[in-house]
Image (cartoon, rainbow, N blue to C red; front, side, top):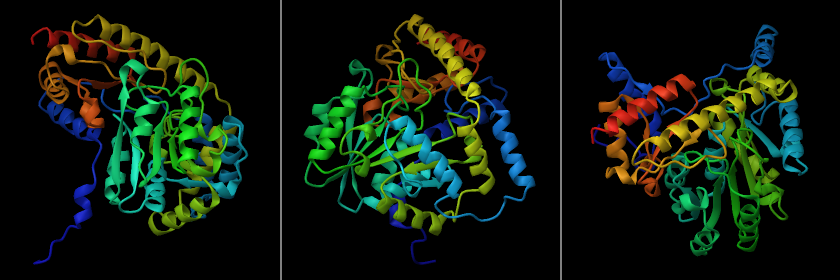
Length: 390
C-alpha cells in the first residue's frame, strides 16, 4: 500500500511496562534462569468460592446472552447501593455503567469528556494509562509530582499552580499504584475546593479502595459540590481477586453515563451477563475472603518493607494501601531503568523502573507484594546479593 496503514494517533498511545517485563522474564526462564516475579500487580489469591459458584450457576442457567450496554439493572442497583453506603452519597442505578474491567471507565470517561487542546492534571508517578489516554485523545497531560516526603501524595500548591483556562479534569488515584500512597482526607477536601472553584471534573480511580491498612477509605465524591463533577472508577479485580473475570464499573452523573454507555455500545456491546451476576454475589455475599486477603497483604507488606530497609543503599516507606512498594534507590548510583534491567538480568528479580510510571518516578523502582512471603524473601535475598556486586 502507498498510504500509511497506521493512524497517526497510535503514536500517542502508551502501554504497561509490567507486561513487557513479564515477557522478558519468561524469555530468561526459558533459557533456564530462575526469576523471582515482583513486577505484576495481580492478587495471587483465587476468586472466592461463593463468587465462582454464582458465575457457574448463571452459566448453567444460560445467562450467557447479550445484556444492556450499561449493565444489568440488578448489577447497577447493587453497585449503586454499595457506593451510596461506602461514600455517603445517594447514587441512582442510572448513574452506574458496568464495563469489562475498570480500565474502560478510564478510557471512555476521557473519550467522552476531553477534547483536543484540553488539559488534564494527573499524578506522576502513576498508573501509565492515565497519561497514555490523555495523549491519545489529543489533550495535554500535565503531571503533578508525587512527593515521597508527603507520603507519596502531591502538594496542593503544585496542583493549583498547574491549573490554566484549558484545564478540564484532575485524575486522582488513592490508594495509589505504584506508590501505595493514600491521599489524606484533609487533602481531598482541599482538592475538592479547587475543583469546585475552577469548575473541573475529577476522575477518581478507587480500584484499591478495599485494600487499605488502618483507617478507612475516603473519596473526594463525598465532599460538597463533588458528586456531579466526579467520575468514580471501581471494580472487582483487586478486591475479589477477579482479574480474569473482567468486571468494573463507573459512577458518574447521568449525562456522562449516557455518553459512556454509547461508547460501550460501539465497542464491547456489553459486559458478560454471568460475570455481572458473580459480581453481585461478590458485593452481597460474605466478605471474609476479602478481609483475609487484606490481612495477608499487610503481613507481606511488613516483610518486604523491613527487608528492603535492611539492604544497603535502599530506603522504603511503608505503603498505606494497594500492594506495591516504591523504594528509593538513588543511593545505588544507578538510574531506575538501569537498575531494573540489572536486577532482572543479573540478580534474577523482575521489578519495574519508577520511570515506567512517569518522569517523576526516576530514583525509584516498584515491587509488587501480591505474591507469597517465601517468594518475597527469595527476591530480597537476590536483590541484596545483586546490589553487593555493584
